Length: 283
Image 1 (spheres, rainbow, N blue to C red):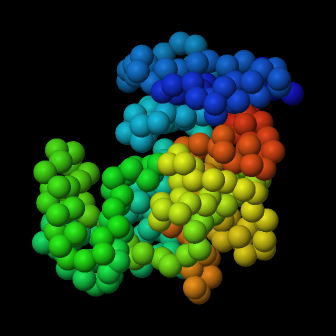
Image 2 (tube, rainbow, N blue to C red; image 1 turned 135 degrees about the vertical axis):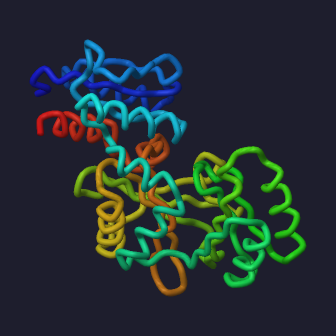
């Protein structure tokens, strides 16, 4: 039962994931406040009619981060919390936290200039992967196989106007099967996991990778929960790769899509998110 909890859904567009969350809320008798991230404004004083809890579903990391900070300022809990969104949504910060907690993760070097980035790539070795510090869906990622490729990509990134492209996140290319793993964590439980397969080195479902259910092995569950706890817990997708030495965590996503995972596994992920958010509101 919802006990009169009003659930805010902060969104950019109503994708299949948001439709599923809205449907799950309706089936549970949970009232929903729709919060379009293009139309909401935030003053310094709490406005009337605030929901009891807000689920952040904005596709923009920046919009979502500022929004959850504002709702926290108003005393409204959010899923996920501002600290989790900030930490997990930034690959640099997330990698530092994973390494600090002893969680296996690919070798990574961060540089703050194109010249230093070339040094970083040399330290990692070819092939290497260049990623934006903030981003999803495999966008603006590049695999570099030699110094000539690296110089061209770094020159291109340097010409981009966003300050985030002045930070160079260099990661080793992990020789894995033509697949990786995504585990979905809600609270302290791994609710489902899937393989993402592709003949391309990027296996994101958003880029056309095929998906299939993955078994919840003890190693996968233990590592996924450790990674989720490391960034603060909540509703998180943990992305892992099967390296020659075992599973490694390469990302933790604080605002994950789950249509492909729900379709592959049959898990009621939207329902679990709503139930978790209602629990957060009751704390």
